[in-house]
Length: 145
Ligand SMILES: [Zn+2]
Image (cartoon, rainbow, N blue to C red; front, side, top):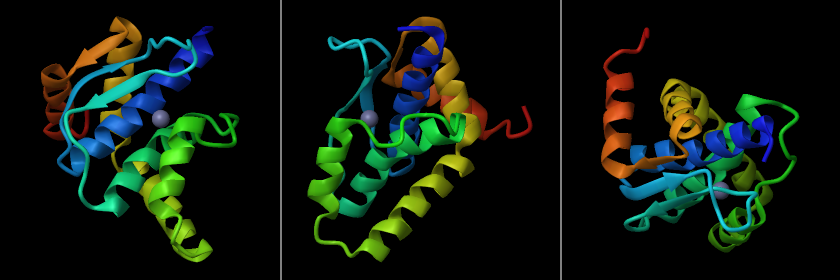
């Protein structure tokens, strides 16, 4: 992966992780390395029972890519897309658009936290769950930093 790709993957995974965290989801680890070399991964301990929250966590990966650079890929990753479709298949187009907007807003509101996690991912390649909570809570208490 080149530098730009690495950065996009880091922000994508950080987007999933930070928004999942906001909905109370905890995870084991987060990485920018994966077997297919294109995507990282975010291993959550458990899913979310609210399908809308689960869809927002999935959408947050791509939303973070878009927030980082407008030239990021036009579509969510294929595996995210499949899961999003399963969760939102019964929604109307306008409901889905509202959800997309909500994911963008969540990413914007949590951008400092996403940046802090992505930065650590780029430095170390992986972030463990406990370390992640520390990074995000340090950011929460230091909003100006
Ligand atoms: Zn993803």
